[in-house]
Length: 343
Ligand SMILES: O=C(O)CCC(=O)C(=O)O
Ligand SMILES: [Fe+2]
Image 1: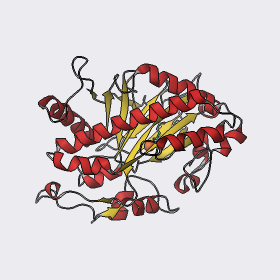
Image 2: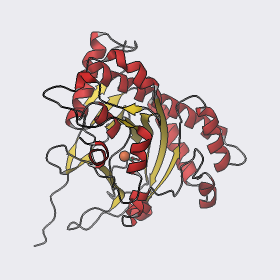
Image 3: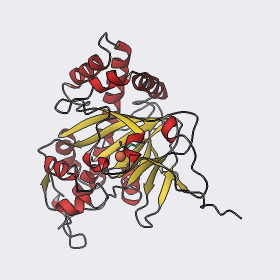
Image 4: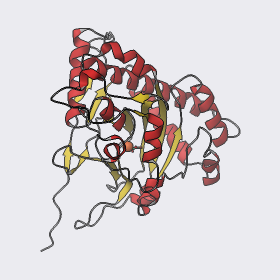
């Protein structure tokens, strides 16, 4: 009798609503803000991810519009997509494989990604306009408006979540400086059903469409269409579990290594990947990577270095960490921060 692998475990990340109980906004510093901040922090320490509900900032209509816009972008001829790529410019885009991915099997080729760098700060509008002008020389105002709104709102949300985590450690007086020195890169991904769309035979592991990695950001805030495939490795057991997407009302927040370093190892940045689950449609996902600005020195505050929790990482400039992580030969596994800055 044929044996099959057990069905992969699925986790449903805890969900925290940021909209407030009525139409009011959640007010910073209030007991309710701190209560929800505590839930987010706890989820990031335990699982490295959390789902957040935020209809006000990123309403389902905007997500839907962005997903439709992305389908149009990915449907462009390869030549138009390639035009958006520029190793030296702000468009680290189509077909650009990071060194750590090149060394892997064809998994790296099973997805396409566009990155619009610095999509959340001053000058974000210019960057988005330049990106769109490269993809559509005759212009595409609708795409530009959708990209700009989605990147801006998702970035704002990511900054609120980062402030909540910092406040939740009792360090509200440090939030403004840390949150104010962040960059946000917006990323759009497609996992093509033609290359990943067949379910593996029951006795085989699923095909990996985005190689396992950790994010370098403080936080990554993602949403997707209804094609699953995101998996993470749990903190203690180390097994791969599928993450059930939180639905059209919420976004998935994944912790990255900058937050691990800042929190002196309290937050967990999970190793994650995207696998083919077989489908009728392409998987589309997008989101914002909120990270320290290049020359920001990431350093755990003295309040988080205690007798029980001695310093785990030396202070480092974020750009040096990125350089280390993207150097061929330094894999992008969950030990990269430890190898770069571990004490
Ligand atoms: O497609 C996804 O949901 C995950 C993307 C991701 O992990 C990344 O781009 O770092
Ligand atoms: Fe990632």
